Length: 478
Image 1 (cartoon, rainbow, N blue to C red):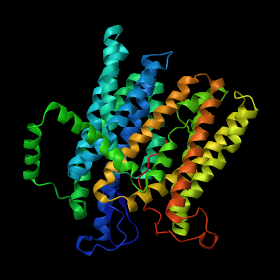
Image 2 (cartoon, rainbow, N blue to C red; image 1 turned 60 degrees about the vertical axis):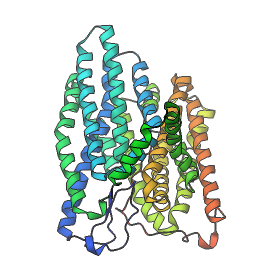
Image 3 (tube, rainbow, N blue to C red; image 1 turned 120 degrees about the vertical axis):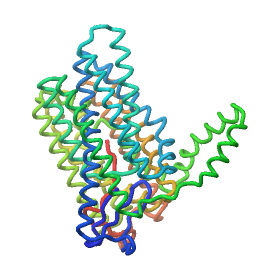
Image 4 (cartoon, rainbow, N blue to C red; image 1 turned 120 degrees about the horizontal axis):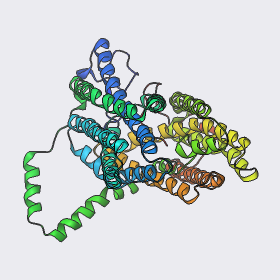
C-alpha cells in the first residue's frame, strides 16, 4: 500500500499485491488534502508498527536463543531454517488466499497472527531462561519454532498486501539496535519488552488500517457469491480421497506453473537469485567481521553506513526510472551491484581471508552494492505491478517470496558446509556467482522484451513510465 504524490490535492492508495499504481485523477473517490494527510498518517502508523515489531522479534529471537543455548549456533540455525522453510512451502498458497479474501479481513488476520505467535514465543523464552529440565527445554524450543512459522507466514501475508520501503529500512536498522541494547542489559527484560511492545501495538494497527480501508473506496473487493462457494463445497464432499489429494497437489502446483509461465518470470527469478547471498550485513558476515578483529560497535557503525546506502538507492531508483525506464534501470542497477563486489571477491582470492584488508574491501563493496540491490528490486517490482494482472498479483508475489526463501535456505547451506571464518571465501564466491546468474537472467528478459540489451539512440528513454520520489513500491531484499 503506497501513496502517490503525482496529484497534490488527491490521494490514491493501492495495495501493492492487488492494484497497479493509480496515475490519473479518481474524481469520484478524491478526498481533501487534509483528509489525505489523515489517511496517510494512519497508513504509516499501522505499517510502521507492524514492520517494527516484525523486525524486532526476528532479530530478538536470535539473541534470546543465543542466551538460552550458549556456545552453539545449532538451535538458532534450526529455528531460522524451519521458519524459512515454512514460507517456501506455504507462501504460494497464502498468496492465493489473499487474492480470494476481503482485503481488510486479510490484513487484520495478518496483524493478529503476527502478534499471537510473538506473545506465545516470549512466554516460551521466559520459561526456557528459568528451566533446567532438558526435556521441557526441547519441547519449548520446538514450540517456539512452530510459532515462528506462524509469525513468518502472517508477515508474508502482510507483505504481499501492504508494504512501504523506507519504513522497512528504518525498522530494519533501528529495531534490532533497540532490542540489542535492552538485551545487553538483560535478556529477560528484552523478552518482556518484545512482548509488551507487540501487545500494546496490535490495537492501533488493527484500527488504523481499517480506517484507511474505509476512507478509500478503491480498496474494496467484490467477494465471490455465497452460492458458488456452497456448490464447490458440495462437489468436494462427493470426491474420493485420491481425487482430493490429486486436486490438492494440482492446486499447490498451479501458482508455480502460473509464475514460471509469466512474461516477468526471468526478471523475478533474477531478483530471487540475489537471496542466495552472504554479501550483506547479516549474521554470517557480522561473525566474519568480528573474527577479523572488528568490535561490535564498529560493525554496528558499518551496518548504519550500509543502510544509508540502501536509503540512497530508494531515492535514486525513481529518478533513474523516470529517465531511462524500469527495464533499463534494472539492468544498470544489477550490473552496478556486480561491479561493486569485484574488488572484494578478488581480495578473497588473492589475500588471506582473515586479514582486515580483505574485510575492509568486503565492507566497502557490500555497502556500495546495496544501492544497486535496492534499485534493482524497485525496478523489478515496478515491472511486476505493471505486468501482472490484478487478480493474480498476490499469488505471483507470494510465489516469488517462496522462491526467495528457497535461495535463502541455500545460503544457509553454504555456511553450514563451510562453517569456519577461514572458509568464508567459498560462500562469497557462491554468492557472487548467484549475482552473475541473476545478471544473465535479467539480460535475457531485457533482450526478450526489447530485442536488444542497449540501444544508443534511446539510452535515456523508451520504456519509461514516470515515477516520482515517494511513489515507491514494496520490496524485500536480503
